[in-house]
Length: 305
Image (cartoon, rainbow, N blue to C red; front, side):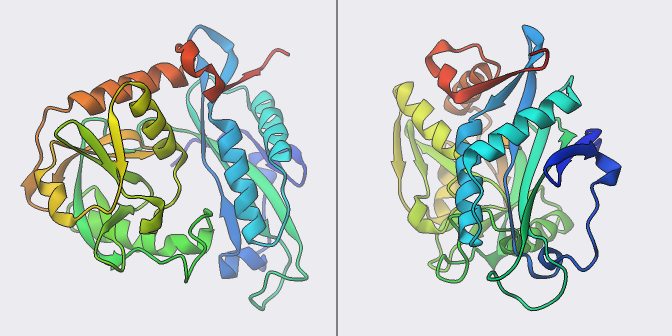
């Protein structure tokens, strides 16, 4: 059972988590007409009265853009102010995951986005390692990643995650940890909720935004960080066979952070991951507020202010 934080942001204020309830007739519950974000926050290891949020501005902007795809307006500043109030109410003492969520809140039926009320909520839960930091096994899913012409993949739209759910469960029930989805052109797109990188001869490759991926914030951060560290990063289509011969393969995501892939189907991948380990170590330093070169990536929230 997840350990939820005691307070949620609901109806424009912080309320006890148990009181943040919805009607069974809520429109978004039936039609998937919602968008969500995900933020990681942790107490500053040097000052527990301060909470560190990784790339909060980027997360707020993406959720705002996702809301726009649902024909509703939710300013990034509104999201960030609610997050600050939420954190001060909960005063977390361990790493947490925040789930901001915008949804059609009217009651009744008929799929639509016009002439309908929307609302915004936030809840959170304690979160350790989403996936094993030692590596995960992956199968190639029988499900195909959607195309942007069928679903608005530039946003985190809740209804679109049915494919991710099917792929993840298929993988786990088949004895694997995670799924990798191909797109309709047969190229590797992403995992069920993470982006993918491979390394060949010291160069990082990752599917570009034209490969029906989610524009992951951790993905963008790893690309920028890798280039800052002197590595070459190329965004291009990835063939399935490249997974089996790459020197390193790893996933990125807000919850997953940087997670290595140790096996794809029946092929074990190399255990030495020098570039991924260097990136993961540097990213950890950034999220803990220990790298002044990337101070702009961290939002600091005082709990005693």
